[in-house]
Amino acid sequence: MFADNYITILQETIQKAWDEQKDIIGEAAEAVKTALTEKHSVFIFGCSHAGILAEEVFYRTGGLAVINPIFFPGFMLNTRPITMTSQLERLDGLGKILVKENRLKKGDVLIIHSVSGRNNVPVEMAEEAKALGVKTIAVTNIAYSSAVTSRHPSGKRLFEVCDIVIDNKGCVGDAAVTLEGLPEKIGPTSTACGAALINALVIETVGKMLEEGKIPPVFLSANLDGGDEHNKKIFEEYKDSIFYN
Image (tube, rainbow, N blue to C red):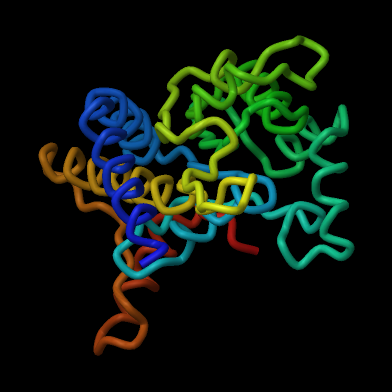
């Protein structure tokens, strides 16, 4: 089948990313665990398809209730025309506004997903958050990002400005499969690999909390008996760290 090679590449990419970065993901989990136990907030952001990771861990059965997505309408995939998302991501000043208006503060954690890591908004958000004392975690593609120039005035890419960098180990351009008769590659790996890595980060965080005898704020399905009651208690306990409205 045409897709056989894609599945093989994807499995190998996820395994490589995990094998080579267990310590880094552990470090990121430690930062998230510390923020949660100290009742700080955790945020996650991505533009366009990169924002899919924010949706992956938001209000999710088996997920941490205290991960707050930053959803800006102009960066969502329901934006029309969709090409506008690419232009907005390159605007100076917008990243600062997003950090300010989403109430990030010292002690919080900000996870930023950007595959190329070159555009203004993700880099600006990381710099602005760090200036506030927020721990920044990048999920990016270092090979891809290293092959392109930054569009940010500083000349830096996301992996160069964040405290912790998780590499999705994808190829330059993200698409990984070549088919005979087509000059363009097909089959991006960043979403599937990113989802695996971000869920691994969540699991490591929960494990670290349990090791310390703390009860992690993990959602139950609202469709299970007792789910609504369980989740309501989490919302009450972490009301100062959850920003869903």
